[in-house]
Length: 152
Image 1 (cartoon, rainbow, N blue to C red):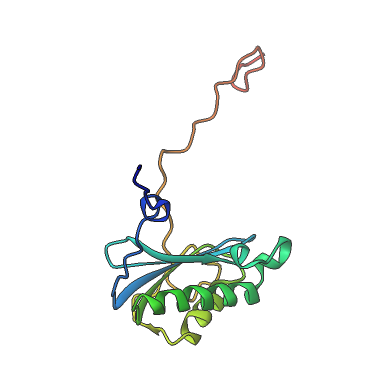
Image 2: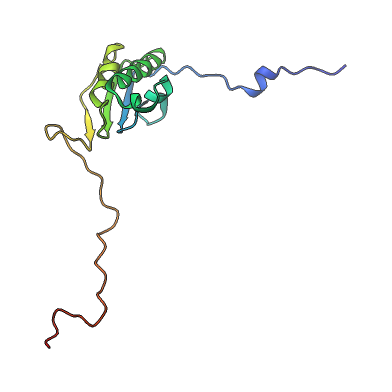
C-alpha cells in the first residue's frame, strides 16, 4: 500500500511570528497612490499596505482618507507582530503624507524622533534631494554656414 503525503504541509511555509519592538515605517506618497511598508531596523519587511490593496480604485486611491485607512491596516498588522515604536520616513509629494502617519498613530504606535521627509513641497520640513547621477548634457555643436561670429 502506498503512503500518503500531506499536500498542505509540503507546499506551504510556516509563518514565523517575529517579536520586534522597533520598526521603520516607509511611506511613499505619490500623486496616484500611497504605499506604507513597515520594516525592522535591519530593513527586512514585516508588513505593507497601500490604498489600492485595501480596495480604493482610481482617483480615490490618492486621497488622504485612503492613506489613513492604509496606515490603520498596516499598523494593525505590525501590532500583531509586536511592533510598538516606529521611525517614519516619508517619500513623495502626494496628498496622503501626513494622513498615513495619523493612521499609524491611531492604532497605538509610538512615533520616535527620526522623522525623515524626502522631497517635500512645504519648506518648513527637512528636505533631502537625490544626488544627480551624471552631469548635465552639453548642448550640441551648431553646423551650417550661418555663424554668429563671421563677418560679412
